Length: 119
Image 1 (cartoon, helix red, strand yellow):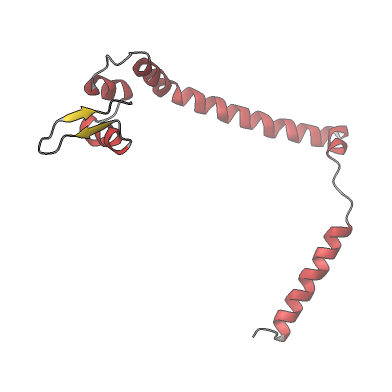
Image 2 (image 1 turned 90 degrees about the vertical axis):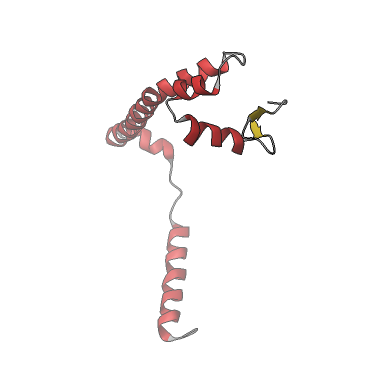
């Protein structure tokens, strides 16, 4: 199967295609700007991307505002208040996240959460 007739045909066609592509002239991006149809297509693609990004920013605005409130609180936010501001469950999401990212730890022998001093 390694050098069967089928494999040799595929290799030969790949090499031919490679040489054909290599002989083609390089694409000039400035040429596209001289054609109104191409320019319009590029403008539509860019405007679609801008609209999609703006909708993403709009959708993320409440979460960003919640993070800003927590960040500006200077340590005066409890875990419960932070969970409410983020709109997440305190026990299911926030506390496991704090433990995973080493912002809090549980003291051995107790269930009490302790803050890590460097955070």
